[in-house]
Image (cartoon, rainbow, N blue to C red; front, top):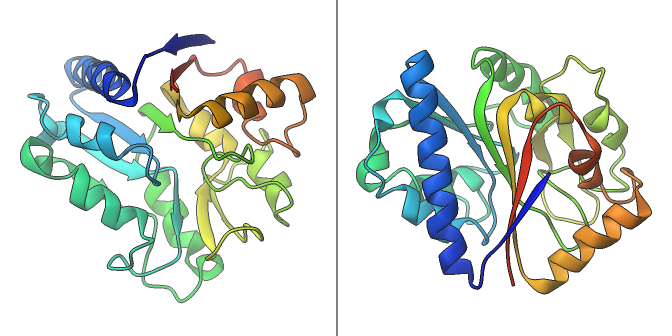
Length: 229
């Protein structure tokens, strides 16, 4: 696990965009394609905008989400909307997008279709995850009724429907083993409070209290932490 510190969120976005671009280009060279998994929220918007301007072979890139709120893609809280408006523009508009949300009424009903989509993608090139100030990552929230299923490294389920309890909307989230089925993993953190939470998670070492710790303790996938105050 490597920690990379930056003086500002803008500098972090530039450096992380370059890292993502190099990773995708390397997989395109090796395999003819690359698969990028991103997260929603405010933190990655600057990163998305930098990525959208990179001169790489976006037509060979597939983008999907680590998690999604079960809302229409026109809803202000939709991660798909965020990605389409900030990442899949400019040069990156040539990329293929695989949403987690489908037409089923609930995430629980839509889980099967979502799992089939994810199974078709194979191993990811890179997963870029964020973290909440409560220590959650993706939509793996503590106290969620199905958190144990999401964190089960022995699970063969690529995704699960989950109710975050402390946050709005039913969600679809990739499970921990599916997130780790990647060449590389990045944890993207902006803000001193989040960094303090990360340090606390390492000290407490309880994945059910602070689910982000599951990423820190695993030995499956190389992880780099990009942090700016």
